[in-house]
Amino acid sequence: MKKVNVTINGIQVYVPADYTILQAAREVHIDIPTLCFLKDVNEMGCCRMCVVEVKGSKTLQAACVHPVKEGMEVLTHSAKVMKARKATLELILSNHDGDCQTCTRSWMDCELQVLANKLSVDTIRFQGNPKERLDIDEGISIVRNNNKCILCRRCVSACKKIQTV
Ligand code: SF4
Ligand code: FES
Image (cartoon, rainbow, N blue to C red; front, side):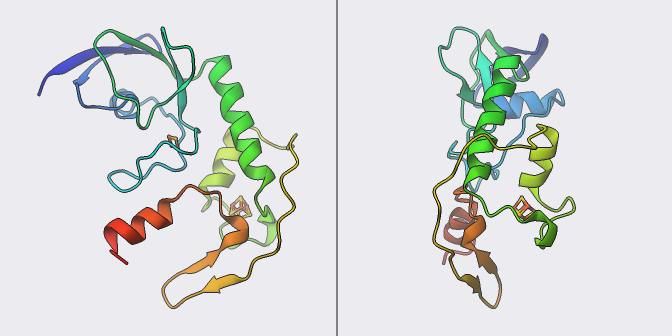
């Protein structure tokens, strides 16, 4: 496999040419937050939590799907990146039934909550669409609360690709 040189936050890394920026960053233990990404199952770049700056690119890129390239220079935690991630998370939370105190996923079993803490999201500047309260789907093997859905599509991909249902 051909390999390429990439610089991430000033650190040089030599990785296979078919790697994404996220994979390359993990090689050098740089933590890029993700929400929708589920390796080999859900790799569609829809939540935008993993955005990074790529030198020469006008817009921020989703690290989980953006391929590396020889000579690429990436910034994963610049002020611009952190501002974008925080705003994205606020938008997600503005449409989320965030009753953490009574939620079964609370107390660090919730990726969304952990991320909100990490990005210091304590107030939400945006007003989400008032939604009709949806019934909780309590199946035999899975409980699905659509009032908390953040549209990451991981459950859809897991059902389709792994369970084939
Ligand atoms: S899913 Fe997570 S963020 Fe949402 S209410 Fe439950 S604990 Fe809070
Ligand atoms: S984790 Fe990359 S876009 Fe969601």
